[in-house]
Length: 110
Image 1 (cartoon, one colour):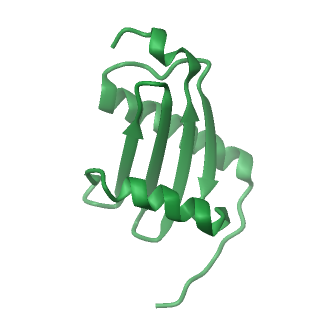
Image 2 (cartoon, rainbow, N blue to C red):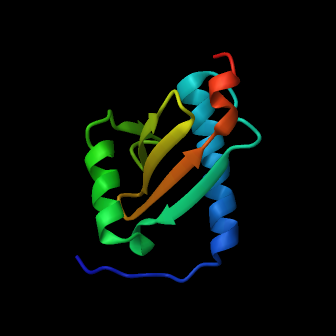
């Protein structure tokens, strides 16, 4: 099957992914992601090979979560120090990663 790429305006894309991470974080931890959390969105087709390999190595060791009849899948690692790594796949076609730095996480009661 051939691959294709579609250009998108990255700012709205980043806002949507950030909102999704905030919602998924709530599902995973039963608490809101801190307001000061910085989310860095890394579309799969724009991530450097070595960083992508590191993310995949970590994420593949974690449980796969499937939603909406498997049209959306994700894996995440939420560390106690406030750093998170997320990998998300849409319709088995588009993959994106995100790194979250949540400085106040260690002060928030779960």
